[in-house]
Amino acid sequence: MSDEPKVVVVTGASGGVGRGIALACAEAGWHVWIAARREAEGGAVAAEVTDRGGTGRFVGCDVSDRESLSAAIAAVLAEDDRLDGVVHNATSGLSPRPVELGDVPVEDLLDHAAVALRPLHALALCAFEALRARRGSLLVTTSEAGFSGSPNLPPYAGVKGAQRGLLRALAREWGPHGVRVNGLAPLAMTPAMQRAFEHDPALEARVTGRNPMRRVGDSTDDIGRAARFLLSDEARYVTGHTLTVDGGACPAT
Amino acid sequence: MAAPEVPPLLIAPDRASCARLANALGAVVEPLPEGGDDDAIERWRRAAGSTVPEPRPERIVVSLGLEPRPAVEVGALDTKAWDERFERPWVLYNVALGAASRRVADGGALVAVVQAAAVPDSGGFAPERALADGVVALVRSIAGRESARGVRANVVTSPIGLGDAARSEAEVAAAVRLMLSPDAAGLSGRIAPVDGGRTL
Image (cartoon, rainbow over all chains, first blue to last red):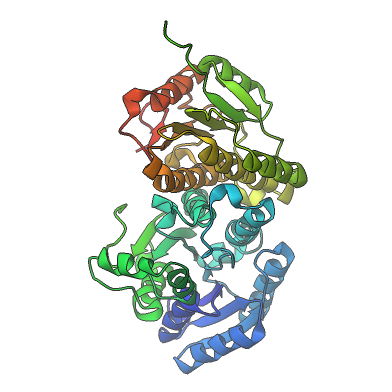
Protein backbone atom coordinates (compact mmCIF):
# COMPACT_ATOMS: atom_id res chain seq x y z
CA MET A 1 0.00 0.00 0.00
CA SER A 2 2.74 2.49 0.84
CA ASP A 3 4.44 2.23 -2.59
CA GLU A 4 1.39 3.09 -4.64
CA PRO A 5 0.80 6.79 -5.20
CA LYS A 6 -2.11 8.01 -3.13
CA VAL A 7 -5.40 8.85 -4.81
CA VAL A 8 -6.97 11.99 -3.41
CA VAL A 9 -9.99 14.10 -4.35
CA VAL A 10 -9.89 17.84 -3.67
CA THR A 11 -13.02 19.98 -3.78
CA GLY A 12 -12.86 23.69 -4.41
CA ALA A 13 -9.45 23.32 -6.06
CA SER A 14 -9.89 25.63 -9.03
CA GLY A 15 -7.84 28.23 -7.19
CA GLY A 16 -6.49 29.34 -3.85
CA VAL A 17 -5.80 26.89 -1.07
CA GLY A 18 -7.46 23.97 -2.86
CA ARG A 19 -5.21 24.40 -5.86
CA GLY A 20 -2.20 24.74 -3.56
CA ILE A 21 -3.08 21.47 -1.84
CA ALA A 22 -3.55 19.74 -5.20
CA LEU A 23 -0.14 20.94 -6.42
CA ALA A 24 1.62 19.89 -3.22
CA CYS A 25 0.09 16.42 -3.59
CA ALA A 26 1.31 16.43 -7.21
CA GLU A 27 4.88 16.97 -5.98
CA ALA A 28 4.59 13.60 -4.23
CA GLY A 29 3.47 11.92 -7.46
CA TRP A 30 -0.08 11.35 -6.24
CA HIS A 31 -3.24 10.98 -8.32
CA VAL A 32 -5.18 14.16 -7.68
CA TRP A 33 -8.79 14.56 -8.76
CA ILE A 34 -10.00 18.13 -9.01
CA ALA A 35 -13.72 18.02 -8.17
CA ALA A 36 -15.19 21.30 -9.35
CA ARG A 37 -18.14 22.76 -11.18
CA ARG A 38 -16.33 24.33 -14.12
CA GLU A 39 -14.21 22.13 -16.36
CA ALA A 40 -12.20 25.01 -17.82
CA GLU A 41 -10.80 25.99 -14.44
CA GLY A 42 -10.72 22.56 -12.82
CA GLY A 43 -9.15 21.00 -15.89
CA ALA A 44 -6.44 23.66 -15.89
CA VAL A 45 -5.45 22.76 -12.32
CA ALA A 46 -5.52 19.06 -13.23
CA ALA A 47 -3.06 19.82 -16.03
CA GLU A 48 -0.84 21.68 -13.57
CA VAL A 49 -0.91 18.64 -11.28
CA THR A 50 0.37 16.49 -14.12
CA ASP A 51 3.07 19.06 -14.95
CA ARG A 52 4.27 18.91 -11.34
CA GLY A 53 4.74 15.17 -11.30
CA GLY A 54 1.35 13.88 -10.27
CA THR A 55 -1.54 12.48 -12.27
CA GLY A 56 -4.15 15.20 -12.51
CA ARG A 57 -7.76 14.63 -13.46
CA PHE A 58 -10.91 16.70 -13.43
CA VAL A 59 -14.31 15.42 -12.32
CA GLY A 60 -17.37 17.65 -12.62
CA CYS A 61 -19.00 18.09 -9.24
CA ASP A 62 -21.34 20.41 -7.36
CA VAL A 63 -20.46 19.63 -3.75
CA SER A 64 -23.76 21.00 -2.44
CA ASP A 65 -25.63 18.37 -4.50
CA ARG A 66 -25.44 14.98 -2.83
CA GLU A 67 -25.98 13.04 -6.02
CA SER A 68 -23.34 15.03 -7.86
CA LEU A 69 -20.80 14.37 -5.13
CA SER A 70 -21.68 10.70 -4.98
CA ALA A 71 -21.32 10.39 -8.76
CA ALA A 72 -17.95 12.12 -8.63
CA ILE A 73 -16.63 9.71 -6.00
CA ALA A 74 -17.97 6.80 -8.03
CA ALA A 75 -16.17 8.09 -11.13
CA VAL A 76 -12.89 8.31 -9.22
CA LEU A 77 -13.29 4.75 -7.97
CA ALA A 78 -14.22 3.49 -11.42
CA GLU A 79 -10.97 4.92 -12.82
CA ASP A 80 -8.49 4.43 -9.98
CA ASP A 81 -10.13 1.64 -7.99
CA ARG A 82 -9.07 3.17 -4.67
CA LEU A 83 -9.40 6.35 -2.61
CA ASP A 84 -6.82 7.39 -0.03
CA GLY A 85 -7.98 10.88 0.81
CA VAL A 86 -10.62 13.50 0.35
CA VAL A 87 -9.92 17.17 0.92
CA HIS A 88 -13.09 19.19 1.41
CA ASN A 89 -11.93 22.68 0.68
CA ALA A 90 -14.92 24.20 -1.11
CA THR A 91 -16.63 27.12 0.55
CA SER A 92 -19.64 29.23 -0.36
CA GLY A 93 -19.05 32.03 -2.81
CA LEU A 94 -20.74 34.27 -0.24
CA SER A 95 -17.94 33.67 2.27
CA PRO A 96 -15.80 36.78 1.81
CA ARG A 97 -18.74 39.19 1.76
CA PRO A 98 -18.85 41.34 4.95
CA VAL A 99 -22.28 41.20 6.52
CA GLU A 100 -24.15 41.64 9.79
CA LEU A 101 -25.60 38.35 10.98
CA GLY A 102 -29.12 39.73 11.32
CA ASP A 103 -29.06 40.72 7.64
CA VAL A 104 -28.27 37.28 6.23
CA PRO A 105 -31.28 35.77 4.47
CA VAL A 106 -32.21 32.15 5.18
CA GLU A 107 -31.36 31.31 1.57
CA ASP A 108 -27.76 32.47 2.11
CA LEU A 109 -27.47 30.61 5.42
CA LEU A 110 -28.53 27.46 3.61
CA ASP A 111 -25.96 28.10 0.90
CA HIS A 112 -23.17 28.33 3.45
CA ALA A 113 -24.34 25.12 5.11
CA ALA A 114 -24.87 23.33 1.80
CA VAL A 115 -21.29 23.95 0.65
CA ALA A 116 -19.48 23.63 3.97
CA LEU A 117 -21.34 20.98 5.97
CA ARG A 118 -23.70 18.99 3.80
CA PRO A 119 -20.84 17.50 1.72
CA LEU A 120 -19.27 16.08 4.87
CA HIS A 121 -22.45 14.14 5.58
CA ALA A 122 -22.64 13.12 1.92
CA LEU A 123 -19.01 11.93 2.00
CA ALA A 124 -19.79 9.81 5.05
CA LEU A 125 -22.37 8.05 2.91
CA CYS A 126 -20.47 7.77 -0.38
CA ALA A 127 -16.73 7.80 0.39
CA PHE A 128 -16.29 6.24 3.84
CA GLU A 129 -16.17 2.61 2.70
CA ALA A 130 -13.51 3.38 0.10
CA LEU A 131 -11.47 5.35 2.65
CA ARG A 132 -11.81 2.54 5.15
CA ALA A 133 -10.43 0.02 2.66
CA ARG A 134 -7.28 2.15 2.38
CA ARG A 135 -7.12 3.42 5.97
CA GLY A 136 -7.33 6.80 4.35
CA SER A 137 -8.23 10.22 5.63
CA LEU A 138 -10.55 13.16 5.28
CA LEU A 139 -9.15 16.67 5.50
CA VAL A 140 -11.38 19.73 5.89
CA THR A 141 -10.09 23.21 5.19
CA THR A 142 -11.44 25.25 8.09
CA SER A 143 -10.33 28.65 9.38
CA GLU A 144 -9.16 30.54 12.43
CA ALA A 145 -12.55 32.22 12.17
CA GLY A 146 -14.03 28.91 13.30
CA PHE A 147 -12.23 29.30 16.65
CA SER A 148 -12.35 33.01 17.23
CA GLY A 149 -15.38 34.14 15.28
CA SER A 150 -15.31 36.94 12.73
CA PRO A 151 -17.00 40.27 13.43
CA ASN A 152 -17.55 40.92 9.72
CA LEU A 153 -18.03 37.41 8.34
CA PRO A 154 -20.25 35.74 10.95
CA PRO A 155 -21.98 33.14 8.76
CA TYR A 156 -18.61 32.06 7.37
CA ALA A 157 -17.13 31.84 10.87
CA GLY A 158 -20.17 29.87 11.97
CA VAL A 159 -19.87 27.15 9.34
CA LYS A 160 -16.11 26.96 9.89
CA GLY A 161 -16.76 26.39 13.59
CA ALA A 162 -19.38 23.80 12.75
CA GLN A 163 -16.91 22.01 10.46
CA ARG A 164 -14.45 21.83 13.32
CA GLY A 165 -17.06 20.30 15.59
CA LEU A 166 -18.13 17.80 12.98
CA LEU A 167 -14.61 16.65 12.18
CA ARG A 168 -13.82 16.14 15.86
CA ALA A 169 -16.86 13.90 16.26
CA LEU A 170 -16.23 12.08 12.97
CA ALA A 171 -12.69 11.31 14.10
CA ARG A 172 -14.16 9.46 17.05
CA GLU A 173 -16.60 7.56 14.88
CA TRP A 174 -14.08 6.61 12.20
CA GLY A 175 -10.96 6.07 14.30
CA PRO A 176 -11.80 2.44 15.09
CA HIS A 177 -12.04 1.87 11.33
CA GLY A 178 -8.62 3.36 10.66
CA VAL A 179 -9.91 6.47 8.88
CA ARG A 180 -8.49 9.75 10.12
CA VAL A 181 -10.32 13.09 10.02
CA ASN A 182 -8.50 16.39 10.42
CA GLY A 183 -8.84 20.07 9.76
CA LEU A 184 -6.45 22.64 8.43
CA ALA A 185 -6.87 26.32 9.24
CA PRO A 186 -4.74 28.26 6.78
CA LEU A 187 -3.71 31.83 6.39
CA ALA A 188 -2.97 32.09 2.69
CA MET A 189 -3.11 34.66 -0.02
CA THR A 190 -5.94 33.51 -2.21
CA PRO A 191 -8.43 35.11 -4.55
CA ALA A 192 -10.98 35.02 -1.73
CA MET A 193 -8.59 36.82 0.62
CA GLN A 194 -7.71 39.29 -2.12
CA ARG A 195 -11.40 40.10 -2.47
CA ALA A 196 -11.71 40.43 1.32
CA PHE A 197 -8.76 42.87 1.31
CA GLU A 198 -10.43 44.85 -1.45
CA HIS A 199 -13.64 45.12 0.57
CA ASP A 200 -11.63 46.26 3.62
CA PRO A 201 -8.23 47.82 2.75
CA ALA A 202 -7.07 48.09 6.36
CA LEU A 203 -7.46 44.33 6.70
CA GLU A 204 -4.18 43.49 4.95
CA ALA A 205 -2.12 45.70 7.26
CA ARG A 206 -3.82 44.22 10.30
CA VAL A 207 -3.34 40.65 9.09
CA THR A 208 0.37 40.86 8.26
CA GLY A 209 1.12 43.20 11.17
CA ARG A 210 -0.10 40.79 13.79
CA ASN A 211 1.46 37.75 12.14
CA PRO A 212 4.56 36.44 13.96
CA MET A 213 6.15 35.61 10.64
CA ARG A 214 4.98 38.92 9.13
CA ARG A 215 3.59 37.36 6.01
CA VAL A 216 0.62 35.57 4.57
CA GLY A 217 1.26 31.98 3.50
CA ASP A 218 1.73 30.62 0.02
CA SER A 219 -1.04 28.23 -0.97
CA THR A 220 1.27 25.53 -2.31
CA ASP A 221 4.58 25.78 -0.47
CA ASP A 222 3.17 26.70 2.94
CA ILE A 223 -0.39 25.39 3.06
CA GLY A 224 -0.37 22.60 0.50
CA ARG A 225 2.60 20.77 1.97
CA ALA A 226 1.11 20.88 5.44
CA ALA A 227 -2.10 19.44 4.02
CA ARG A 228 -0.11 16.74 2.27
CA PHE A 229 1.48 15.84 5.59
CA LEU A 230 -1.95 15.37 7.17
CA LEU A 231 -3.02 13.17 4.27
CA SER A 232 0.20 11.14 4.32
CA ASP A 233 1.35 8.11 6.27
CA GLU A 234 3.57 10.42 8.31
CA ALA A 235 0.42 11.67 10.03
CA ARG A 236 -0.95 8.17 10.63
CA TYR A 237 -1.56 8.83 14.32
CA VAL A 238 -3.01 12.33 13.92
CA THR A 239 -6.77 12.58 13.94
CA GLY A 240 -9.51 14.87 15.20
CA HIS A 241 -7.00 17.69 15.00
CA THR A 242 -7.13 21.10 13.35
CA LEU A 243 -3.66 22.21 12.31
CA THR A 244 -3.28 25.95 12.06
CA VAL A 245 -0.90 26.80 9.21
CA ASP A 246 -0.75 30.55 9.58
CA GLY A 247 2.65 31.79 10.66
CA GLY A 248 1.56 31.56 14.29
CA ALA A 249 -1.30 34.03 13.98
CA CYS A 250 -4.06 32.06 15.66
CA PRO A 251 -3.78 32.07 19.45
CA ALA A 252 -5.95 28.98 19.86
CA THR A 253 -3.34 26.25 19.48
CA MET B 1 -38.61 52.50 45.45
CA ALA B 2 -36.48 50.46 43.06
CA ALA B 3 -37.98 49.82 39.63
CA PRO B 4 -39.00 46.20 39.07
CA GLU B 5 -36.31 44.26 37.28
CA VAL B 6 -36.94 43.91 33.55
CA PRO B 7 -37.17 40.21 32.76
CA PRO B 8 -34.71 38.75 30.29
CA LEU B 9 -35.92 37.87 26.82
CA LEU B 10 -35.73 34.21 25.72
CA ILE B 11 -35.84 33.63 21.97
CA ALA B 12 -36.81 29.97 21.57
CA PRO B 13 -39.22 27.61 19.81
CA ASP B 14 -42.30 26.26 21.55
CA ARG B 15 -40.76 23.23 23.29
CA ALA B 16 -41.17 21.93 26.80
CA SER B 17 -37.54 22.42 27.80
CA CYS B 18 -37.61 26.02 26.52
CA ALA B 19 -40.70 26.76 28.60
CA ARG B 20 -38.93 25.34 31.65
CA LEU B 21 -35.87 27.51 30.97
CA ALA B 22 -38.10 30.56 30.63
CA ASN B 23 -39.68 29.78 34.01
CA ALA B 24 -36.31 29.24 35.65
CA LEU B 25 -35.04 32.58 34.34
CA GLY B 26 -38.28 34.49 34.79
CA ALA B 27 -37.96 35.29 31.10
CA VAL B 28 -40.43 36.61 28.56
CA VAL B 29 -40.49 34.35 25.51
CA GLU B 30 -40.22 35.51 21.92
CA PRO B 31 -41.27 32.44 19.98
CA LEU B 32 -39.23 31.15 17.04
CA PRO B 33 -40.84 29.19 14.22
CA GLU B 34 -39.99 25.50 14.09
CA GLY B 35 -37.12 24.46 11.87
CA GLY B 36 -37.81 23.37 8.32
CA ASP B 37 -40.29 26.04 7.25
CA ASP B 38 -37.78 28.31 5.54
CA ASP B 39 -40.37 30.84 4.42
CA ALA B 40 -41.73 31.24 7.94
CA ILE B 41 -38.21 31.61 9.32
CA GLU B 42 -37.32 34.21 6.70
CA ARG B 43 -40.49 36.17 7.50
CA TRP B 44 -39.60 35.99 11.20
CA ARG B 45 -36.08 37.16 10.46
CA ARG B 46 -37.25 40.13 8.43
CA ALA B 47 -39.83 41.13 11.03
CA ALA B 48 -37.24 40.85 13.79
CA GLY B 49 -34.88 43.09 11.84
CA SER B 50 -37.31 45.71 10.67
CA THR B 51 -38.39 47.08 14.03
CA VAL B 52 -36.38 47.05 17.21
CA PRO B 53 -38.81 47.83 20.02
CA GLU B 54 -37.72 50.23 22.74
CA PRO B 55 -36.65 49.90 25.43
CA ARG B 56 -34.19 47.30 24.21
CA PRO B 57 -33.75 44.27 26.41
CA GLU B 58 -30.53 44.23 28.41
CA ARG B 59 -30.47 40.45 28.71
CA ILE B 60 -31.29 38.05 25.88
CA VAL B 61 -31.04 34.26 25.82
CA VAL B 62 -31.25 32.11 22.69
CA SER B 63 -32.00 28.40 23.02
CA LEU B 64 -33.39 25.66 20.82
CA GLY B 65 -34.12 23.40 23.75
CA LEU B 66 -32.49 20.47 25.44
CA GLU B 67 -34.57 17.54 24.26
CA PRO B 68 -32.72 14.19 24.31
CA ARG B 69 -31.24 12.79 21.11
CA PRO B 70 -30.33 9.21 20.23
CA ALA B 71 -26.72 8.40 19.36
CA VAL B 72 -26.51 7.86 15.58
CA GLU B 73 -23.27 7.81 13.59
CA VAL B 74 -23.08 10.22 10.68
CA GLY B 75 -22.97 7.43 8.10
CA ALA B 76 -26.26 6.09 9.47
CA LEU B 77 -28.08 9.43 9.26
CA ASP B 78 -30.28 9.77 6.21
CA THR B 79 -30.85 13.15 4.58
CA LYS B 80 -33.96 13.85 6.65
CA ALA B 81 -32.16 13.06 9.90
CA TRP B 82 -29.23 15.28 8.89
CA ASP B 83 -31.65 18.10 8.14
CA GLU B 84 -33.44 17.67 11.47
CA ARG B 85 -30.33 17.36 13.60
CA PHE B 86 -28.07 19.85 11.84
CA GLU B 87 -29.33 22.08 9.03
CA ARG B 88 -32.64 23.18 10.52
CA PRO B 89 -31.32 24.02 13.98
CA TRP B 90 -28.32 25.66 12.31
CA VAL B 91 -30.52 28.10 10.39
CA LEU B 92 -32.55 28.83 13.52
CA TYR B 93 -29.46 29.59 15.64
CA ASN B 94 -28.12 31.95 12.98
CA VAL B 95 -31.43 33.78 12.62
CA ALA B 96 -32.13 33.98 16.35
CA LEU B 97 -28.62 35.14 17.22
CA GLY B 98 -28.70 37.66 14.39
CA ALA B 99 -31.89 39.14 15.80
CA ALA B 100 -30.59 39.05 19.36
CA SER B 101 -27.34 40.81 18.49
CA ARG B 102 -29.26 43.59 16.81
CA ARG B 103 -31.86 43.92 19.53
CA VAL B 104 -29.78 43.79 22.71
CA ALA B 105 -29.29 47.11 24.48
CA ASP B 106 -25.91 48.83 24.68
CA GLY B 107 -24.04 47.34 27.62
CA GLY B 108 -26.30 44.30 27.57
CA ALA B 109 -25.60 40.57 27.70
CA LEU B 110 -26.48 37.77 25.35
CA VAL B 111 -26.25 34.03 26.08
CA ALA B 112 -26.68 31.16 23.64
CA VAL B 113 -27.63 27.79 25.12
CA VAL B 114 -26.76 24.74 23.05
CA GLN B 115 -26.59 21.00 23.62
CA ALA B 116 -23.18 19.46 23.17
CA ALA B 117 -21.61 16.16 24.04
CA ALA B 118 -18.08 16.71 25.30
CA VAL B 119 -15.69 15.94 22.46
CA PRO B 120 -14.64 12.51 23.79
CA ASP B 121 -18.33 11.57 24.00
CA SER B 122 -19.29 13.07 20.64
CA GLY B 123 -19.38 9.85 18.61
CA GLY B 124 -23.03 9.46 17.63
CA PHE B 125 -23.66 13.15 18.28
CA ALA B 126 -21.72 14.71 15.44
CA PRO B 127 -24.52 17.06 14.28
CA GLU B 128 -24.87 18.36 17.85
CA ARG B 129 -21.11 18.80 18.15
CA ALA B 130 -21.13 20.73 14.87
CA LEU B 131 -23.98 22.93 16.08
CA ALA B 132 -22.22 23.67 19.36
CA ASP B 133 -18.87 24.63 17.83
CA GLY B 134 -20.66 26.61 15.15
CA VAL B 135 -22.71 28.50 17.73
CA VAL B 136 -19.52 29.32 19.63
CA ALA B 137 -18.07 30.85 16.45
CA LEU B 138 -21.28 32.82 15.85
CA VAL B 139 -21.35 34.10 19.43
CA ARG B 140 -17.68 35.08 19.31
CA SER B 141 -18.38 36.90 16.04
CA ILE B 142 -21.16 38.83 17.78
CA ALA B 143 -18.97 39.46 20.83
CA GLY B 144 -16.29 40.95 18.58
CA ARG B 145 -18.66 43.09 16.60
CA GLU B 146 -20.81 44.40 19.47
CA SER B 147 -18.08 44.92 22.07
CA ALA B 148 -17.72 48.54 20.99
CA ARG B 149 -21.12 49.24 22.51
CA GLY B 150 -20.42 47.25 25.66
CA VAL B 151 -22.35 44.12 24.71
CA ARG B 152 -21.12 40.77 26.05
CA ALA B 153 -21.98 37.44 24.43
CA ASN B 154 -21.30 33.98 25.85
CA VAL B 155 -22.28 30.36 25.36
CA VAL B 156 -23.60 27.82 27.87
CA THR B 157 -23.43 24.24 26.69
CA SER B 158 -25.40 21.41 28.21
CA PRO B 159 -25.02 17.69 27.78
CA ILE B 160 -28.61 17.11 28.88
CA GLY B 161 -29.98 14.06 27.17
CA LEU B 162 -26.71 13.31 25.45
CA GLY B 163 -24.84 11.03 27.77
CA ASP B 164 -23.68 10.00 31.19
CA ALA B 165 -22.35 13.46 32.06
CA ALA B 166 -25.87 14.93 32.08
CA ARG B 167 -26.59 17.74 34.53
CA SER B 168 -29.89 19.15 35.67
CA GLU B 169 -31.66 21.88 33.77
CA ALA B 170 -31.42 23.91 36.99
CA GLU B 171 -27.64 23.99 36.65
CA VAL B 172 -27.90 25.17 33.05
CA ALA B 173 -30.31 27.93 34.09
CA ALA B 174 -27.95 28.93 36.90
CA ALA B 175 -25.03 29.17 34.47
CA VAL B 176 -27.15 31.30 32.14
CA ARG B 177 -28.11 33.60 35.03
CA LEU B 178 -24.44 33.94 35.95
CA MET B 179 -23.43 34.83 32.40
CA LEU B 180 -26.23 37.40 32.19
CA SER B 181 -25.39 38.98 35.55
CA PRO B 182 -23.14 41.91 36.41
CA ASP B 183 -20.85 39.34 38.08
CA ALA B 184 -19.86 38.25 34.57
CA ALA B 185 -19.14 41.81 33.44
CA GLY B 186 -15.62 40.88 32.34
CA LEU B 187 -16.60 37.76 30.43
CA SER B 188 -17.32 37.69 26.72
CA GLY B 189 -16.82 35.08 24.03
CA ARG B 190 -16.58 32.40 26.74
CA ILE B 191 -18.01 28.90 26.80
CA ALA B 192 -19.41 27.55 30.09
CA PRO B 193 -19.82 23.80 29.66
CA VAL B 194 -22.25 22.61 32.33
CA ASP B 195 -20.91 19.07 32.50
CA GLY B 196 -18.93 18.76 35.68
CA GLY B 197 -15.60 19.22 33.98
CA ARG B 198 -15.99 16.68 31.21
CA THR B 199 -15.13 19.30 28.58
CA LEU B 200 -11.56 20.56 28.63
